[in-house]
Length: 149
Image (cartoon, rainbow, N blue to C red; front, side):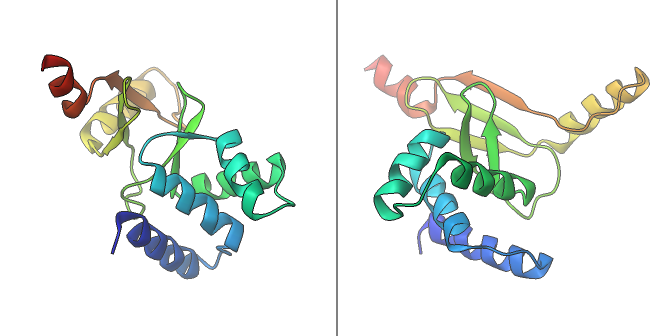
């Protein structure tokens, strides 16, 4: 079973447990993002969806993305205005993203202690954190190895 299939099965189960609808369009958007491996922009998703669903329009994609983010199945890469599948949808805490600037590969980390420390520092300043995005950009191991050859 592929990683994308595993994520889709987890998503179906999670949506069923939460009593929310995992519609065919939502499923397909998640599938396209999961198969990509790196960040995928909304209009790239729309281009792919419109070949399969003639009625697909920007609001369709953005509604699906909003749902998937709300359910913790997809993360938005703020610096690229792109989306990546959550590698660990059952994980309800903060996350960090490693983003390769060469190939676009994205890896998700779950360093809860970093998220907790930042939230605590913000709290001491009288600030209530509602959302936290930490993106680390650089070169993945494969791209670094290829550039050294």
